[in-house]
Image (cartoon, rainbow, N blue to C red; front, side, top):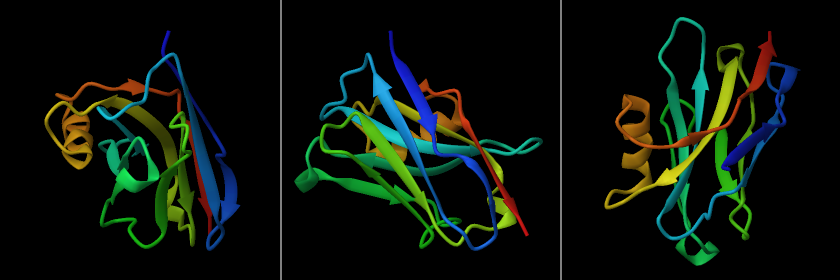
Length: 136
């Protein structure tokens, strides 16, 4: 059974930092896999934030959405079972439920996989989400 478990969310003030973690089990993260982070705000579309590819550090490729680039960093451990989202200089508009996802990229890049998952035509396993609340 595939399980993704996010952690690290919480309530902080604007300007502070948080690092989210997502532990994956029951799924083999290999050269075909992508991992990513999404944010959901009530009443808005789910936003694709970042993706990462790479079974080894030498093969690591990351993508971060323009809206959070420079403040958010995606990474993963070398074992490949945990993906992180480091968030700095947090703003009230960053408030939302954060979800991690993992899936097969097939013939596309992980950035394209991220977009396909956002559209709804890409396959992914999801975690339950972790809430992030930023107060001004």
